Image (cartoon, rainbow, N blue to C red):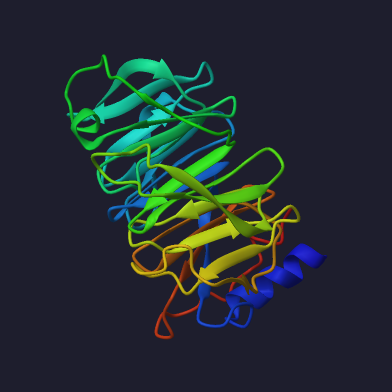
Length: 266
């Protein structure tokens, strides 16, 4: 079976140069890592947090969850928006289908291709009546990090938003970027990864404060296909088409798990 062969390559550490991947117990449909934490949601919209060894269930139901410098945020099947406050979910005014807390204190999200954001002062407000700013353009997925914000539209075209800051989450201009992706995810430290239409993973090369758009896409040669990813603190988290979760560490010193029998029992 091709999937099993791919998993064997991953566990033997030869599937991706510089990355060593381990199959993590559980199944998720979406995952987000930021500020040293990892959250995810399952097909049943249940919420989970990684404690370093396994997944802890968090009360509530969400279709998308995000964690980062802006805190922990999520949206449910009705597009209601929630933020974690004092260990509890608090609903805030507005509607989003996807939300991202990876910006430098600001928050972004989309709802039916419309784009919205919150400045830092609103993000950290303890109130629930927050004033979202409408951003021009249309996107289906939007994510921010240290060197700016990236998004993809319904045609899988890629864009970078210029001049975004904690006090000006709207920015001022879109810059088209080469390539075609179904999602682009930006980490807190500014790394940018994407997934294309056939589930392959790419990393954007050459990103810096002086060149926030970078220079080119580089294929991350890990067997897929994958449907969701997130990156934080040197770890690339992946979800494949079957909902299996992989933790890929950007180090040559981590020890590989070689027992793939459970992974092949599909």
